[in-house]
Length: 355
Image 1 (tube, rainbow, N blue to C red):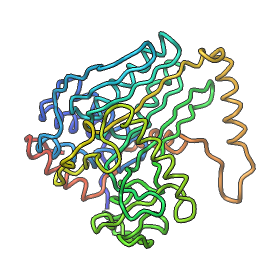
Image 2: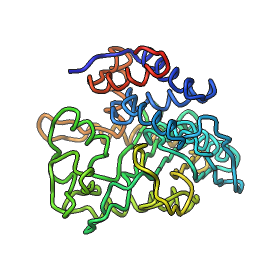
Image 3: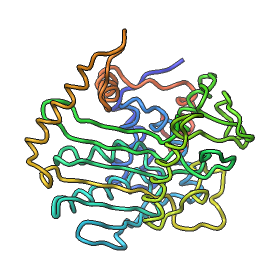
């Protein structure tokens, strides 16, 4: 059973919660915009359903509501940003905009981030480059719930990758994917709905395939992209994200990444600071004229979209489902499962708010 709420109603509620946590007006608005972009795009696992998680991290003094985000090292095209334990929903856009500024000056910009927290959906940050005729890249590591191929230990996060590429007349190409067969948030949705996990999504503590979406609580692990027969490919992608996001920036990597849930303490022997992100911005006209590139992107998109498909199916372009979902939800509202509504009501009660 789900209830539907308008985007503006959810925005006002979430923004009030972030203000209640002590965020500045600008940061509260940015955090809300980043968070709700997930709900609009149909990534329900990373939207307002996670608001209570951010609140609990703040209550546990693991999130700084008033961070002094700063650059600790830079060159004309690169930088390392320290997020001062701020909300990743705020730190991420700050760092991506710095990458865009550098790209405007020298053609490309690359920013690694340390000392941050969960930053929402990867796609939001990558898409910030689109209005500037830039290709945006967004990566982040995450708490270890994923077993590398042949491993019984959880050493990687779901470590998403997003690439946003502008087009001309056609909508942009927006890839936004976890490097696991399914993200942990998808498991949480299955749990709320009382549904089993499909084969190839998760393994138990002994490395056997499982359909229990709560298996990670029992020592199990998520499986890298590619499932039981091709997980080495997802493992390689997730490892690359971990290295660029954290080893390069000075954040925690591998099993040392702090957990999102507040009831679990971060590892006692950290190898870095907080969670890490990595952002890239590439000015299209640093490679070829932007109009020329976008015309060819239109041709690329149309060619793939018009590909002959199997019966009752259609070839989609990365970003199509999310774009259509955004249009639908802005018009008809955002559905929330009753468990999420109840959770948000409890959050609101702490600040005298009613959803």
